[in-house]
Image 1 (tube, rainbow over the protein chains, first blue to last red):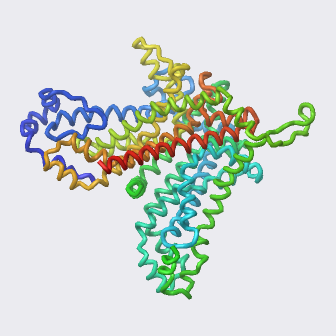
Image 2: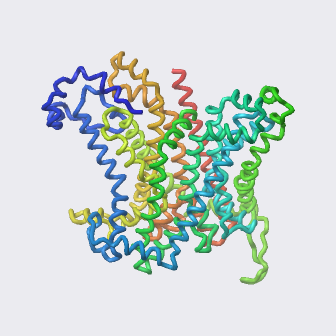
Image 3: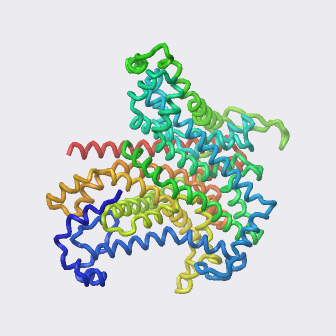
Length: 326
Length: 313
């Protein structure tokens, strides 16, 4: 995937740098050449600069990694502390190990409301994203495979709707849900999330590039009906793109905050985001909640990270396919 | 269009392959949801923004009725200095946060595309990891790191004699900007990196034969090639800025320096909940939507023109 093409072809100018001494003392060659700190945006340095650049870039990378990882590291460390130690011990150093106690307290607090929130988040995200993806797949497939009256109008509406910012719709959607009697229900959070125009476009682009119309024709000649063709050919060929849509829809629902905050007043229906911020707010008056918020945050983040890592092959491919065409 | 229909459905018309209703059946679920939860809310917002609730009786009796108010709510929103100030605030936020984040994302993407980075996957993972942390949780997390009582960062700064207050009136906006940069640099980097990876490698070889060094290649080939992706990610970042809600709403609980109408979206929210004025809230939502639309269109206009110009040159 990432062959070091440039490195292998252009080494002729740097024999001295690649000497054994150079590799033993990687800092030495850097000192020999004029030090130019790599600026962002122009750091794809010439290989003639070799090691010096390599070190400078590595330093930049380590600094960047620290910035992005340290808060997560703090979260892990803080989760192992007791409520008191959170304030009394150095933040980046482990103290006594209270993670298990914290998890027990997290599970017991308010009759295990935390796990109820987790369950709700899972329902909203898993069920929601599965349906969203299916709806997007159906629509994108139809745009790619069929030519029908009104196709351009619907496609245009989908494109135009990308300019309508989602959170601006939260308040009117809430009013609509109240009118429909769907506020404070699972459906009130689930249904609005099913509309995902960007997903439809991705599905369309993906279907267009991955489903040969000849194959659809051939299947028809073999007597397969349209639904069968969709399920056995369309869905399969679109799979990589669909996983991308699934992931983004999942993440969208998992992160969703403003709409559930408006729609739900019943604690037992809330997702983790709303529940945990509620705890954070209450922790001003209820001191023990602070550490539970920390542990709860950690527990809520871990599954997403695992999902993302496990599926990165898919979403990276999906981004490339989507990005190239846009 | 219709000729294309015929091409597709020609072979076996009578098997039902080309039945006219089939494509419509495929798009019905989406269309219904689209109308109900995207088109309808727009009309609900516009409609509601034109009314106001007047109680006809004295005080809290049930005799309140919605009466047509014309542009009254819009006038109220636009003459509300806090609401206007919230736009200025997110504008200032965007002017700083978006360039910083995009330069960081673009720079990292270029580095990852070069041969200079060892342990590429590990570093990419590090940069992308925060994207897996929901915005609300990221705000909670950074909220702890901003509080002097808990934060090792502030404690460290204090130990070397710097009294940092990241939640002061002048700094809290940048404290939020930092959360956004932390959260979204990764996804932008991945998109730009994907665009870079799809540039044909032969172009680099050709440039190298012409004597271009890597910096020159980055500047003259790589950046122009990923420019469309760069603009797309920038545009969506700007739209995201205007929508700012979760991060300030969460930080609001730990600092008095974030008002309930700190950002336009928070103003919409608090007008609907605290102010209990759905009509005013709708007018604000419509104003925010229109503002976002205008900003998006202007940016697209400008970038299209520039692209056209560079093509002519």
